[in-house]
Image 1 (cartoon, rainbow, N blue to C red):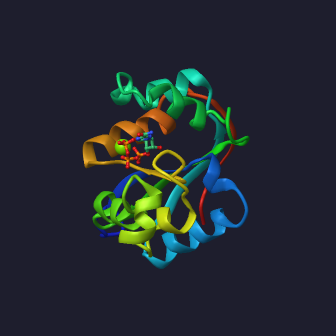
Image 2 (cartoon, rainbow, N blue to C red; image 1 turned 45 degrees about the vertical axis):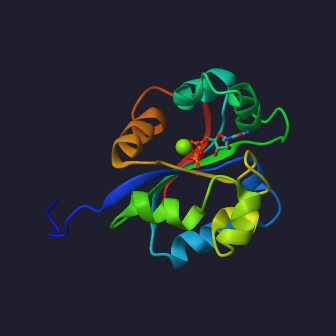
Length: 160
Ligand code: RTP
Ligand code: MG
């Protein structure tokens, strides 16, 4: 970079369909900014079955896979997902810490200040996704932002 600042780590965050309901989106975005992340890019998309299955391919043999795909493609809850690239130092680990444990119902007890405690419901409807390693983050960012569209982009813009 020409401005002399080191490029900071990036991670992929998703606000899942349940996290786009009510005032959850604002609460989640406030938590993102309060914790010092910058939203590099964001894109509101309706995932189709193929894109959701591909994104969560690592879980394809799990019992919850088809239910997870239905959840992410809005069979249960109508609406799209908001894909975001977040940037800060230690972004991957810090975003995982901020969202809290997978099971939102447990997070409400053990991590009451986490995003999943605040806006999630249970082990599936947990309102947000976060890349689980720097390698996953690179793969997931490419999945949504560098290759030809997976799912149909509704809006895409660079955050100011
Ligand atoms: P994510 O990938 O969405 O950030 O969540 P995670 O790492 O905390 O959890 P992971 O094990 O990767 O699971 C992916 C998503 O699948 C749903 N899930 N359902 N019914 C179940 O037992 C179950 N377990 C996981 C959740 O939506 C979880 O975030
Ligand atoms: Mg995961």
